[in-house]
Length: 460
Image (cartoon, rainbow, N blue to C red; front, side, top):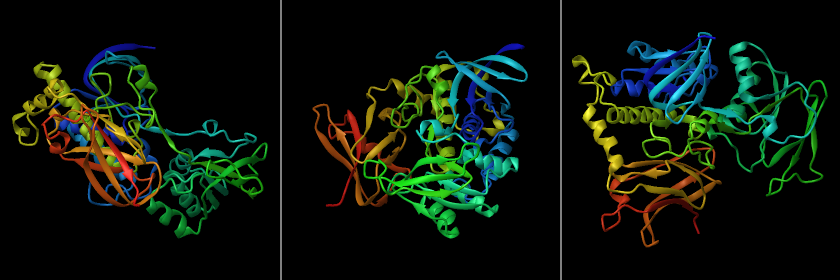
């Protein structure tokens, strides 16, 4: 195959919602040479198969389908002249920011000035779930079934059971019902749903589809094709309870048991990963442990709404522009035509932001405390902030009438309450956000906290 070598200021791996938003933000920040590498044959990523509405309320103030949401960004990128390559699979990323990509045109090695990782996430397959039984036809992940129905025009089955209550599974329960299939029910291992409340109501309750909590799959019947499944209730430890088994006839099993950030390329690049999220450890600028490599969207941590993916990715795009503004003094790296100066932010602002990396303040380490599964970012550089520090996190359980507490740790090891917010309800399925004012990131002595811990206090 033909091989070529080239250079690009900003390489974006993935042309889904995160990659599109990062590219547009970087372009608006003045980065001239940008290229998006997308392995599918079209831009848009997962949005192309999400033909239901509910996208764009936060970003555009109106309700859009997935393809409509993607089209807004794609049209803007085409108008801006941002380069992209579809049908192109990135095979490797090195710590010195070289990308090897393969396509029908051949293999190319690209030297990037900065990289934004936007590979998204993938579903947990059957092999990761330790499901017993035969391996007959008729077992799909919910996302695969969604693509088959919405893009390929194939029905995976006529009598369906959904294992797991993730949002894709809930949406497909409704979609298959609308297409004439019978969804016998949704079985969820946890005592609470893994999907958004609105999807529980709109996709299950509105269609009289039962949701069985604290319930799991213990057997699959059928050798050539799924014929039935056996379910059982589970105890507080998640173990099946003997005597609670029941068998349901079905010809299709959909798996909706969680999503995993796709970070094989991140590992190749030497990026340090967060065990709790499965995504990279990042600073508040969304820069990973490898300088010049940024991450955003579901490759960083799984989001609920695409609007938040776009918001986060735009931040990564601007941060990459800041990095390039400082690292490269070549005049062709950044473009600021006179006619566009009013709509583009000046280079000096980004130089000032990125120069704060060498701030006299040591970065503040963020930790997930009691009741919190993870928080993003992992560190905050006080010298970099122009406003409140935005922290995204997920809780470990369902909490009602609880308090979200942020504690600061001094150099002497003392824990001091920095912030407290009353929360009527918090659930693991919904990502939470807390804004910490810059002033609260400093002790009374004017020094930054050594660390911050985010935790949940239940009502007594």
